[in-house]
Length: 219
Image 1: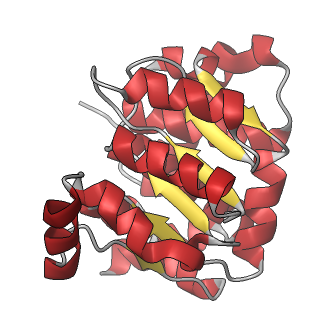
Image 2: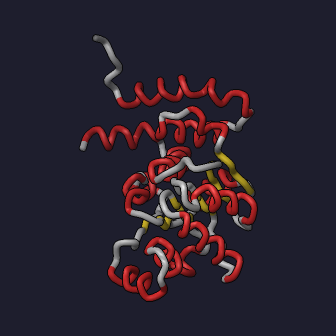
Image 3: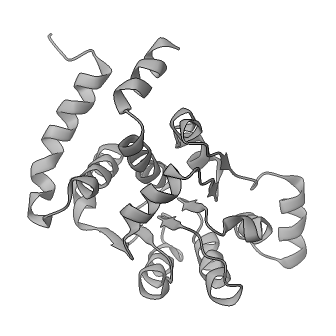
């Protein structure tokens, strides 16, 4: 059986097959890149019609990453999924401290989730940075609270928690209340790979994806 073996050819063919599914959305080329990678990560073309963005999210995210912004995640799966080589080329780093003993103690003391406690402990570091949430609705609710009550302004919130308890509601509140640029997905769908795919799409718009594929293939 003949099949495509080269990583770049596989990716290019995938993007070619995805494109007709979002043609009716009349997106910019940058938006197409983000939407397509989300669909690619999920294997679900429905994502194209579920993604919501606001306040020039794509443009502001690109601007922040190009300036070396750091990324703060709710869970390790998001951090792991982000291409750290591409991010490092731009001068940024990615952080997650949900597993730290300090966060665990703080969460237990306050009776809140560790992801929520981690965002609270990041505090002012979130200002001007990118927040990527792919698992915990409580983390997204907390970041929204911080923007409203503590005047913390991330450059971009990628808020795509998944699940049936609070996920859809947190994303709805993000789209309704956010005072900063955001990318989210309507409903219960989402997850760490989807949040990471949005970040990676932005990174690959700034760093040649072919170069990164070559580096990864040589490992």
